Structures are given as C-alpha cells and as structure tokens.
Image (cartoon, rainbow, N blue to C red; front, side):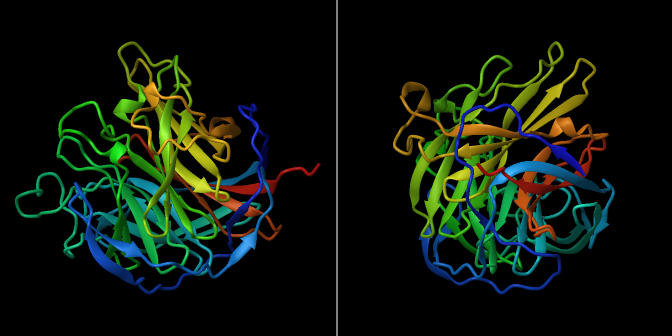
Length: 420
C-alpha cells in the first residue's frame, strides 16, 4: 500500500463532512422509483417529471478526507464482450452502500451497442485489489421507451436524441439512477439530465440552466461547447441536493484552459424538485504540459463527488499530445469548497462579471503513483467501507474504444486527516 501525501495547498478550505455509507460487496435488485406529473423540458426532446422526496436509508458520519493510500488496479480488456455488448467507454462509476452494487456507464453513442450501463462486483481490501466481475448490463431508454439512436439512425429509423452519456449516480433512495449527457451542437442537442429505473426505464428529467443552452446548432457565442459539457454529477449525502459540473467553460464564460491560463467551469446545484438553487464558478487549472508542435492538449473537470453539501472531490483530467502523436494523461484530485463562493446563477457571462470562485486544495496527483499506464480517468466514486474503518475511493478510465488506451479501475484507502 503506497501512501500519497497531500499536494501543494492551493486555497485553504475546511475538510469535514458526511459521505455515503458503505460496506462490503454483494448484489441485489432495486425497484423503480415513482415519478410525478409530466412537464415539457424546453429544447432537448425530453419530458421532465418532478422527482419525489427521498429517504436515505443509511446515513453515516465519516472522517475528514486526508491522504489517499493506493490499494491497487484492475483492468477490463478492450476486447471484452458481455451479453452481446462491447465493454468500453466507461466514463462514470458509482456504488450503492445498501445493495453493495457498482454501476458503470458507457459513453458509447449507440455506435457499438445501444446506450447502457453495467453492474459489477469489485473485491478489494487495504492489501490488494483482487477482482472485478461484471454482473449485468442495462439499456437506457428514451421517454417513448425506445433505445437511443446513433448519429446515422437519428431522424431515419430512430427518433429522439443521440446520447453522449458521461456521469451516473444512484439516487440515494437506491431505487433509480441519474445520468448526464453532453449534448451535440452539430446535431442541435442540448445536454440533458435523466432519471431511469434500475431496468433502464425513463422516469424523469432535470432541466439544464439557460446559460448552458446553445444559441444555435452549429456555432454561436452562448452555451456549452461540444464534448466539453455535463461531465460530472453527485448527490449530497443526505440526498436532498444534486450537483452537476461542466467539463469546461461555456462560450460566454471565457476561453478554455491553455498552457498559460486556467479557466472557469460552472457547478450547478439542484433541489429534489429539480429547481436550480445556485451556480458556482470552479477554477480549472492551466494545461500542465506543453503539447508537441501542432498537436492538441486540454484540461477539464471529468467528474465530481460530494463530501457534504458544500465540499467536493473534483477530478481534473488533462490529455497532452506529444510530437509523435501519443498522449500523456495528467490526472489530479482536488477538494473544492463552495461555502464562500459567489452564486453566479444569475450571471449571464463570467468573463464580464465579478465573482469569487470556489476554493480548491490539491489532494492527489495520480501521476505520482508511477503506474505502468495512467489513462483517461473520467469517473470517481466512494466505495465499500474498509475493515480498518476508513472509506475507500475508486476511479475509472474511459478507453474511448481505442486500442491504444485501457479501461482501468484504481482503488484507494481514504486516510482521515490528522487532528489538531
């Protein structure tokens, strides 16, 4: 077990809170959640239903997040077939402490197989990450009950929207899941947030903020950037609030991160009725390394995980292309604190306004693990409670269905912060 110390302090912020309860791994089925009256959701081809208030069945106080001790790694082979589907593109992960079930969502745009999520069992302790076993696959359905089309099927044999699914979370009631899609400006689709039963049946939607919506299909100066939109989501431990994070800046909020300058991503807070309560600006780092001549590089938020109602672990993921065309990934986990940040919900454009962004503190640079390969880490989740009483943490990479990449899961022991 390798203990990774805190990184450089960026901004001091208190680190205490309540996390999702967890214990060891087993698997069982859940029942779909009830949904309320249907209301149209403007501009995304989905129909929203008001989510019912929930009861959190287990609510346990956890120690402060201190150091992360690396436990081990498991990989899923790129040629893995499971129940007639190609396993890959795993961009989000979550754990249900009541049923001990893991879920992993694929960002397959229905090109290989219809949009879907997988269930799994993970076995690890403080000594090693022993195994990963897939236990199920579920197709996600549109409001009309059909599967999501791919871009060639859209408007011909299938209707609806082409998915680009990035984040998935169990509803804290344990009876449904919520997932986000990035949208597609070229096809005229805004991002969306949907709720589904454990069998994939559509239940309801949350509306996206007006600031996120595009002002035209192909371009314009407002709204999300294609492939840089709704990457992260998380429920607060009490289940009363749901947060989402954009991967990069909206057009009206300024340029995306460069080697020389950082940028701002928006975090949105919802209540259980789907009302947008607040928004906050999260400061995204500059790109940590210079790309080769004429090559590409980026940095953005790939997921978020609630510690309590104002503190979050934020995944920043950067891909930098070398002169030979190969990519190096730079992955960092930050702790963000929204407690003193300005509510920017009513600000049309961050680049023309005055505000205080979220505070952030570096917790871990994953490159410091010196793994044989560190890939495109896109998902983060609390995991099972360890026998030493600590929480565990698991991250997952998206292989983009690319032979040069891997699907890897990394497990960590969350060591409490030192007292006093």
